[in-house]
Length: 280
Ligand SMILES: Nc1ncnc2c1ncn2[C@@H]1O[C@H](COP(=O)(O)OP(=O)(O)OP(=O)(O)O)[C@@H](O)[C@H]1O
Image (cartoon, rainbow, N blue to C red; front, side):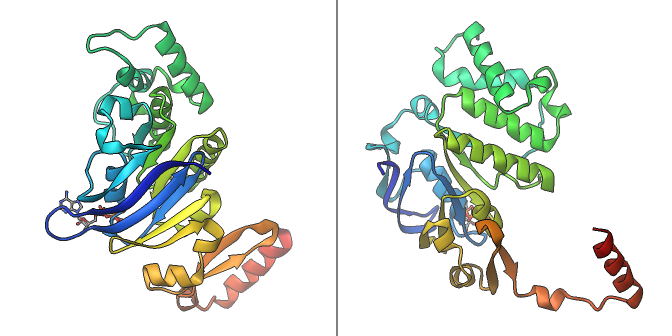
């Protein structure tokens, strides 16, 4: 498969201390890639390098065959969009206006949005099933809805590569599942997602590829089912986690520490559990 993004022997450090060391990776179009690693392992730094916000000290990053560092920011924005973590909206922009902002890289310095821009924005909102929110203020929608608004903005930006830093952080369980579902749908349409996560289970749910970063180095990179293993999870997080296969080909992570969390159930609880089982 042709490489969409190639990271060639990249080294980076904010000061003298190296944060990323000799990182080489290659991502293909339509892949969902999860970057996993302990706090401070360099995940966000790698995302910033991919978006051209930082330049490698050594090595290079190519978008198709062109160095990212040589692509003007407005041009790069038409290919790569950043969807930030859920955050509190501080300005009361209308949802439709926030989505329209995605058209900026396509416009001259002084411009007005035209009918075609508005049609694209409406289409993106409908695609994510949030058309009904278009006239609401961004301060009056939930965190999960705001995350979808930012994805809609990335779609009208025309980007085909979405970079997301812990996209489900702060979302309730239902919205986490729905957001990951949207990512999987868009990946089926050819969009590429490079996202960080602290949840190996989320990587198992929707990722084609997993890259494990530890102390700035890639310790594993490959197909999700090969990389998410007890061995690799122990190397990464220094805690034993069993990866259990379920019917239907699903896999889940079960930390061994759960044994220690078990508390003896009072006799009365056992009876209730027994009743629930019968009823269920
Ligand atoms: N602007 C900065 N100036 C100096 N050091 C920085 C800066 N940003 C990050 N670092 C340091 O670089 C290292 C990697 O940080 P980075 O944010 O890439 O890690 P991360 O894997 O995304 O962490 P987390 O999972 O906690 O978000 C950390 O030691 C961090 O303290």
